[in-house]
Figure (cartoon, rainbow, N blue to C red):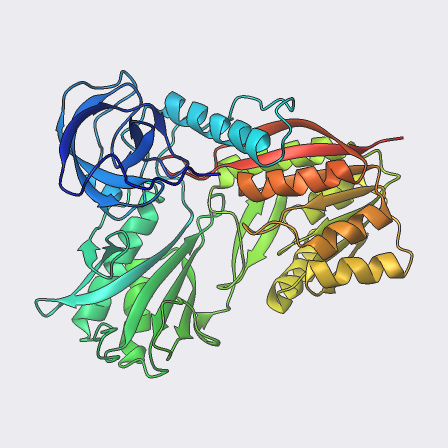
Length: 460
């Protein structure tokens, strides 16, 4: 519980010299004045700096660096200051080995604080040989500036677009494609969306690219279904980007911050491109969830498959199956896989992917995991292994209750959020499961995010 201060020991605009003691899970330096924490961007543990207080709260405050007096041995030169301003690379000033240690520590802290299980081993984070240019998908806003279309990213916590053409962590071919598509739209006088006036048309350019296949998908997110002159724009994109197999227009007429709308119009090819993962070929639609770092995803999924300890005799439940990326590999080593996913389009793609890879021992069901799992439990479904890869909010209580009722021998938890994973692991532990060691995997270098894999075993 955070300490409440009747009167904070600092005041707004006050300047002081501090030494940073820690990093928050958001990557901000922590300095303390009489125990009162101040959070400061770009401050690394061990560094001394003169800071200026910018905001004072009851439990903590914020400050900014006025002058850095010493530098951490883990500090490295910032590759692109824009990546810090827009929040796409908040850890780029930290040596990569220190980033991996930071993420391991984050997992350890939530296991102590939230799960109350400090005894659980957290292994060293598995990193990348080259932690740059890894993202296979980009959703880039388009705005008008001085009569021209510009692409970039919004400054953190604002709607101010900072023009950017090299995002550093994206596949360089995706960066090039965004600029080429933007310039083609400029050439044909397509107007950028103005969110204040709710006028103009092109809102975002989305590019998805297969790491192994090289196939590229272009998605033009527009305010209206009208895209003029479409007959010239499409050939121009195909000429500039020969690897494009699909061009899709997504229509979002709403005045909101959601990127994709409900209407999809195929302008070239099909609403599909292909890539490979774990030896399987996947068809991926414009709306499909597909992990953005293929190299690290394979490491993550191999760990999950190993943790399942399949011999070919097991019945497996794969919750949150998406387009079947884990399901297909599980099915190759299991007797049968029952998979569930709430997005109908994803289930359609999963069934297509199973058929394309000649895998028949999978049954897919459409529905929210927290609804399907209790239904299966009530029907007496039994499984030897349960694999979960939930969104950031983690598992719903109804899902966990149903999972405990089905009582699989092993549970493999793939997590994208250490905090909700820790909460859920505590509930499974209380329900009779032993928690094994946790293996963090860095799918998002230069950012604060970390994925983890952990196996649970039912107590006899």
